[in-house]
Image 1 (tube, helix red, strand yellow):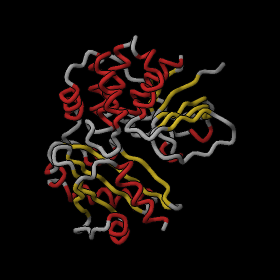
Image 2: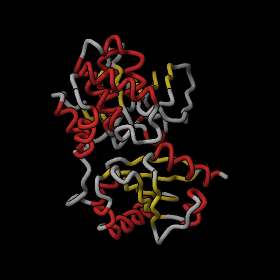
Image 3: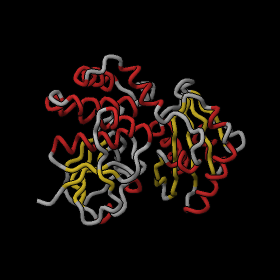
Image 4: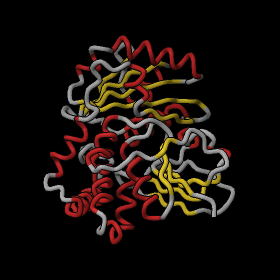
Length: 300
């Protein structure tokens, strides 16, 4: 049997990488990543002394298990020439396959929650796997502040913490988030692409990036750079719209910067932008609070 690789979405985050590592370990597969690690994920892997999965730049001809995504635009390069054998995810389905495969999608806050829920008996014997899954849950739910959070996420996180020996979940979550919660001194392109996903909304290419901070003023101080780069990205890469979400995890809200039709942003969010951005209190989740209204605006 040829080797099977478990891999997450482009611009990999903590949930996509940790879920790939643990699921590969559980199934006897090989974990891979489609891009460089961000600081948060690097912090988590270093904390648990786990090496990063090997970089896969092109998946053509390989067998893949997709975790934490099923959008074709988010699949590793060469994915259209690979054999997809399985999908484990927590997003809405946008996947077409010509042959029957195993697809497991649940409406919870992270892919790690799905994996932990169904493999807890095996995870109990591996504190490192429990720790990786816990970090992924805390990351994707923004320490349970995201509206994507469910009671299942919280209950499973508590169980994982006991196995991993993490006594203070809140403090551990804050430490994880602090690892990439500053954009000072970073190239603005890196900031925008550290967690960036492409979407197809009614045949229109839309890119949405997000970063989480403890002080939204760091984004405000660089608003001109953000706007300039988004416009450059839109004109150079064939996007109908590009959006960047600067999320303040303390104030629990987001500033949305965009390049594209301002009327479309107003249609999506029911608020007139101020120039090329708008503040949306309570908005923490791209998956639940930004992508769906934008998709509706583009397709209705």
